[in-house]
Structure formats: structure tokens, C-alpha cells
Length: 510
Image 1 (tube, rainbow, N blue to C red):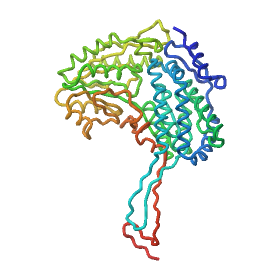
Image 2 (cartoon, rainbow, N blue to C red):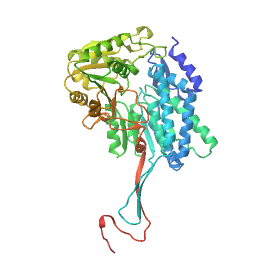
Image 3 (cartoon, rainbow, N blue to C red):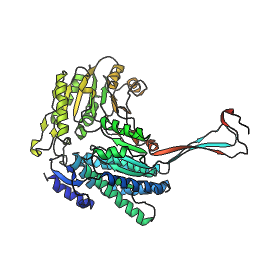
Image 4 (cartoon, rainbow, N blue to C red):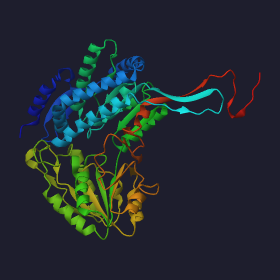
């Protein structure tokens, strides 16, 4: 196994990325696969952040008047740049976030996909024409760039979430100020590098089009995120992370009457009914529960199975779990890489201890692959049989723990169990029955922002709006009409008559 620092040098060379301008102290990038330190990076001061915001605001004042299709062309070029560097950027994601190779590459593909989506969107920022009650009048709505968009992203999707926000924000005519997780700064620097290269090439071809400061990167810890959330000149802040973090961001943004897009914790469930295809369900459960070592906001945490099929399904899962390949994320055949750090491992062990104390029977969950490094935190995915939905199941542990719980009666009982947690991100049902599927998708069904039938909870496509309810924050990113979160709406009335009638029949003659 080639040590991570050596792999990093190969990746940086492929990206033509020199870290010298970023070197310093305050932020350490480490590789979860072997625990090695990758780089020591300088952090930005609040004074530097203020200067960046000044530049971003000035950039927006110019960029907002650039025709949307021209903005779309810039994002199309970014997608092309990402295609050219997909392999290297994907490997960097694997090095710094611990994802297996296919997931690292898949995350970059998600960036490419959202760029393609945003390019089409650049010619479809449509408003409505609205019927007026007044003769000789026309009403319509128009959508305008909102300003500087602040992005706060998490370690588990270190590049995709940035692209969801930045591709839409740029096409919508905004500037971007990004504060990535301090656990994954190198992937952020690489993205900024590729975007700046794209911006420079575009400006060289179309001089005067790209204002300086259009997209900037803030490296640092919590204090920079708090600063960003508090800035009146950042009208929209999109934050991805824990519910605790989201509450703090929401309060700071709300105090200045700004807008927040929050993508927070998930505690996702799947219901398996008696009519389900159990083999299909087992495959979906496995990826949803152990993919990314259980470190996705959409990871499957709770499996609610009808009592008539719980034993055969659980035995099948135990067999899969016992043979699943845990190891170096860059090695062929690995399906489960490491946890991000020791804190994640300790949190997992604490939750398993709590589950045992609450009557659960735990299979797996122990540390694995010790030979890959003392500071590399690999674990066997854990299956926990529970007889009832206890306290440990009501909070999210960012690790591969799957609680298996029986239900009896009809699907309404299972839905009630699913919804009886504070979070509301992703959900799924496996069933062969049309009625059960439709009930699950109905107003009395799943209370989550994502509700799937006969697929897992994890692996959303960019075409649909992504986000959830309750403690998940209520925000929406990526596809559908999520672009509206990055713009401001104006309602316009045009009078082309020679009279001046008032609405609602009001008379005011002077």
C-alpha cells in the first residue's frame, strides 16, 4: 500500500496544483485510510474574510447583469474541466474523506451532472405571467440574483455539496464564498483551483466577463462559519452538517433576516413489508447502511421489518455483513473504507454500548484492519437487533450501525415508527403492494423530504430537489426548482391602458 502522502503528490501533480500558497499552520489535513498527515495549511483571519466578502460583493454587482446563458457557458466549461480531472479529483476525495474509489469518482460525476443541469437551467430561469383583474394590465413575476451566497459544507461530501450550491448560485447570477469542513480542506483547494483555471480561460476568451472575486475559499474552523452566517451582505447561507451546527447557523442568519438553506442530520428508515422482494431489499439495505462507512446523511439507520419476514431477512443481512470487504478505500474490491477519525469511532462505540444497555443484540461493530495504521479507524459494520424503538435509535450516529426492528399489523404501524424521530431526511419502503406504496407516499405516509419505493435511502440523483424536514432543516438543494433559493422574486404589474383602476374595486378619486 502506497502511503497517502506519496499518493497525494501524484494527485497534486496530475491536477497541476501547488500547495505552497496555502501552506502554513492552523489546519491539518489527514488521510483516514492510514492516519497520515497530508498537509499543514494556513487558515484565514477574520480580516481576510472581510476583504474576501468585499471582493465577492463587488463581483456580484457586475456578474448579476451578465446574461444568464453566458453564466451557463461558464458553468459548462467548469463541467468540462471536471471531466478532464475526474480521476485525480476522485482519488483526492478518497484520500482525504476515506471514500472507496467508486464513491470518490461518483462524487465528482455528481459535480459534472449538476453542471450539466445548471447549464440547461441558465435558459430556463422562468417567471410566470399572471392574470390581472384590472383591464389593460399584465402581472408577471421575475427572478433576480440575490447577492453573495455563503456555502458551509461537511467532510462526507466534500466536493459534491459545494457544486450543488455553486453551480446554481453562479448560473443564477450570484457570487460565492465557501467555508469547507476543516477535515477536508485539500479537496476544497483543488475545486477552487480548477474553477479559477476555468474562470481565467473564460475571461481570456471573453475579456471583461468574469469579475475578480466571483468565487472564493475560506479555510478555517467554526469561527469562520459563524462569521459567514452573521454577515448582512451574504443574503443566503447554505449550510450542510449536524443539526447542532444548523441551529446555530439558522439563529445567526435569522437575526439579520437572511435566508438559510439547511441540510442537516438524517436518521433514515426503511420499511420492509411481507410482500417485499427480500433479496432486492437486502442489496439496497447493504449499500444504504454501509456505503461511505455509514457517513452519509442519507445512510440507512433503522430497518423496520414485518415480523413475518424479519428472521430470514436478518439472517441474510448477517451473512452479507460477515463477508463484506472492509479495508483500504483505494484497493480493488473494498466496499467499506475507514471512519473519518477517532471521534467518529468513539461515537459509534458509545452508541453500541447504549444499544446493548437498551436491550439490543449487536453483531459486528468492532475495530478492523489495525495493520493499516494506529490512527486509521476502520470498523466492521454493525447490525443491532432491537425489540422496540429505544432512545439510541432516535439520534443519528455517523457510522455504519443498522438497527433492525420488527413491526406487526399493517403498514400504518410501520410508518408511525418511521416518523417517530426528530429527523426527516430520507426514507424507503420495500413492498410488492400498490396500496402500501401509495400510502407511504401519501400525506399520511412518510414525513421525510425523500420517500422511495423499492430502492434504498441513499444515492439521490441530482435531478430531484434534495433535503428534508424537521431537524433536517427544511432546505432544498440540487435539482427541480431548488434554484429559486438562490434568487429573489419580484412581482411586476404593467399598466398599458389609459385608466388607473385599483384592485379589489377600491375607489380613490382625487
